[in-house]
Image (cartoon, rainbow, N blue to C red; front, side):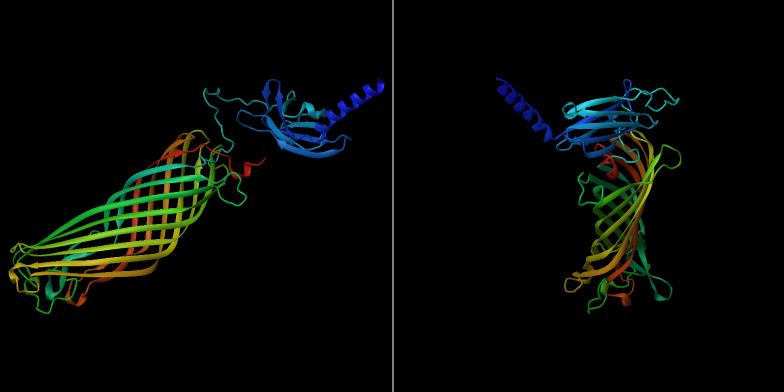
Length: 472
């Protein structure tokens, strides 16, 4: 009977020891001072085997914010039998627990009280009701991603073209009307910032970014030459061999209308990295640098329509259409700086700059339809249509700067006012002839830029800590 009892006890002991020797789980340590959690403390856990020899020592800070303030969860290694836990607070107080059985720690929370371990309270205003003042661990970081929407006014400078000519002193010809160099318009933008995966073993950035900007403008200028004043209809191609007839120098008078319109699309794709820059101005305001790399594509369509109408003969007129389609593509580099007050709300402001060297590809067409009723139906200029296509590829550089200031209402919504300037080193245009020696029409180039002001709404995702704080 005694042998049977011994066997049962031995089997029970082995059954209890076997899972203990191969145990895998977690334990949570909570550090308190009375009933209050201590957010500034470090725990040191030494796991030991059955023989009392150390297997692993883990040292971790407790969480400083959130619903689990003052706690730290640690994985228990295999073959652990007992553990020693030491807690050290920011005030220098310590508490130690030794020989804690692993069965009392596995998947449980153990509370270690450190009397006087909490930092002394400083005098200040009474706490506000509602959500905590700093619910996120990274004060200098805004949301992890979001959708910015913007709109405003723009002023676009593009190369000029001319319409019609009048005769000046000495027989020289000067244009009757010229398109405006700077044209007012509207601008709009939409974007998205997507946080990079948390497990970024193969990534060194924080966000995938995409932004699409639109700029549109429409303008019209008019000019007149009174009857009796010498002027000429514009020829974009050499005059037919039959001579100028009614389309050459004339004193019948004319009105000239030059309509210009354009649509510019600018799309940038890439990655962005944010690096904390520390407090500035006055604590606790924070700041950070942003660095970006990606690709940029711009599509620019510009169209000029020139109409010349005789004031004497209704069927004596010329209509010219000049259409340009330009594509720019190249790598895009950005750098920026932003300063902001602590979350969840407050003022912020900053600036950014970009540069993109790349290729400018242009396709263009020029079409002229001439009508000369007084010439008679037998004349080759009675109803004449001429057209030519052009293409060009060249190197260009696109740069831009942007400044903004705004207010964050909560971690997920902010508004800002901004001003931006964008410069393109060259944009193709037409050199419309203003004299016979300048025929035929051809492509020329000049710089282009856009200045815009407006507002932006940003809807952000829930914020996440910066990369260096994700693994504690």
